Image (cartoon, rainbow, N blue to C red):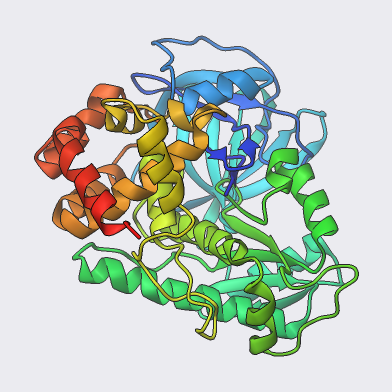
Length: 445
């Protein structure tokens, strides 16, 4: 499902979404603004053009931005924050695109030579602020540290209103206006996924780490309220999905999948699971988005890096399979995915061309075109499933390479090919026959 307002684009199963950043070669970045309400992550700098050295990469992160962005905000060479300032707390007074004053505090992740900054707040939100909008930049006499669970819950409740209550679990802060039992069920689902996710990668000998900060989740009681919030935050395409993860705000947004304006609240876990059994894909969607959040917070992805879409989406789909007999409605990792296998087998027989893996891995174009999105998702799942079952060591090496990518620096098709070949010992084309033979045999009914 859709990752919204990202530094890294996705083509949602339900459509496209904008993103405020473009990757360029060298150490160059172009920030964009797009139509969103003031609290959404549109850059604070307004549509001012700066110099654009280097060549804009086509495909991948750039293609969707070119199509949907409304204006260039900043282009400049980047410098990472120095080691001595990486955990310093900064206060920024700025003017937004409507010329309204604003104040934000956090740590500076990247500072451009012309003074523009990418800042992360204590709540984990990302803000890109262009130099012409910065009124003052002050280094505070304090060290950056994330909000506590209680502080994050208080902030979410202030934003959403007094009708919302906060549930704090070991790793999540869930702010919701729906029934208590459903929120608790969601908390158990997310914590079980967290434990399974970290255990899986630890057993695979990958150095995952706990999330640095509590993970925010918003849960609406009614779909209409969810859709209104989603459309204002991320656009109408995202509003049609049953869940989404915002990279910029680092939060999952969902709604009560068992209820609505004309449906009474379910009071037990058994009632919830029974109701959700009518639409199991909805639970898979929540797991999918929660997996994205974990991958970006536990060391597999970097929120500001150019992460290949096949890898990010394939990983999320790998964790989707359901077991509605479990208390949380989800259990399996790495089982054949019933939501993807049929589409992939149809793709093989009707539309798949030679060197399809090359087109999937070397750029993100197939995810950005409506006619090929569904097939791209299906093949990304199938490839991830195959690699983790037959070439797990290579996949872990690939995860490490992607996790080491630099913030806001584009990865070329040649870089992607090298990452794949050096991780797996073969090119995508050289793995093609083995891949197809394995998936067809293991998913045959």
